[in-house]
Length: 573
Image 1: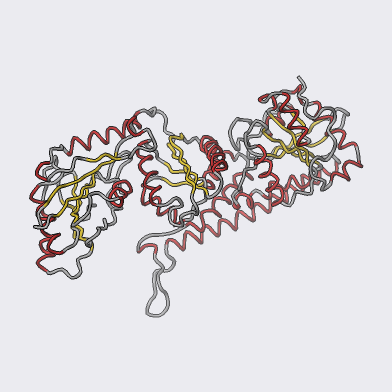
Image 2: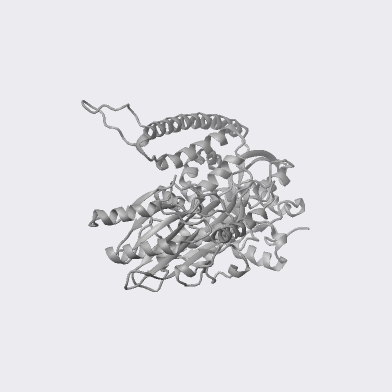
């Protein structure tokens, strides 16, 4: 609902001056005019008299919805949260204010134009006699070839003229601008209901690392069925505690999200609840951080009962500290004699229910852990060695399991395609049977809530005789991924287990490069979907398990636990 009142610095004004300000609320402007000369004159006369800036917010119907009073140097626009704004549309309000001295539109004016998605921002200069000198106005620009260059300004200025000489048809201007912003949305297939996301990475480190993080964030977004419409990387000396990226860059994000018709802002960093509220209030977009995105992907992928329980537990632990309320219905009510309230507030009830549900889920996971221990005991009685495939997400672990065991575990070229761990029996060349496990993929900076929830599942790795660390050798940042997996294994206290590096997707690189990398890292090279490349891997596993001396030496030995059989860099065709 519109504001319709006088806002700002009215302290010290005479009652007659306040009444004259209130009478501005009754003024109407023809919808096709930006402002009338009469209204402009009344504003400048008042401004010259009180020596403060005077501003108005005018609706598209021409109604003055709010009158604002600032000081000699600036003006503050009131909270506009109650004024609804649709996707791809402006706020439906234009702001015009006086200026006692200065060049015209300031950076703060342009920031407000972008952050508040105003129809237009205008400044009226006040002459020494209290009459209007000129008006200078600006509006946002849609995404066209004219602003495709990142260095181009995302707004356009109207000619600086006297208010009586304005020749702009305001309604036509706004309709054309909103049509330009909506044009991007119309390019989207009407049948495609997926959210459109703008991705943001803010870093205090090296730009190359930020670019690698952005590439991974794109993969995560696409795995969650988001359409990536724009990307932004910012390097800062330190992160802004309020908005992460600073007010100026937030302005750019808002404009670009408008130009590209984004529905979601996705940040690579985890955001605090306060940061989410601040950015959400400024943009009117859905705000997601990396942890929320990964949790959502896990929720989509979970198929088993255990997987679903673990995802729900992780989500609740993430959301519990972020439960917050607004308004009187969520305020803490006092109790006791003379101040008895109705009991728990809605916020407190929500938190209590979340804590109760977390406790129930943790008990359920404890029971599921006992069932797994029973199954492991049965395997131990059969004395079958256990080999587990670990690695970064999308490295090809499920594909390798399928090829080795002729299984049909879901394997897709997307992150976290497999969430639930899978065990299969595999026969090695010397007629030895083993259990081979496929595990959930790792990722850098794995959210602590997920780490805690899935620690029970990853306990399957603890009983492994050997870990195959599968690596996508074609990934530009493969060494960074190796380090991320090693870090997670250390956090899970599994670094003591013997491991062998296995480079997958070796067919995507020249053979000589693969051989050099394998020699450097003492790794084996395979193509997970090509059975012909796997015999060296199977022979090496068999040789390792057949040698008690190797197994004793391998415990805690790190890389490699054994000397690979044959040429480590060879890809058998």
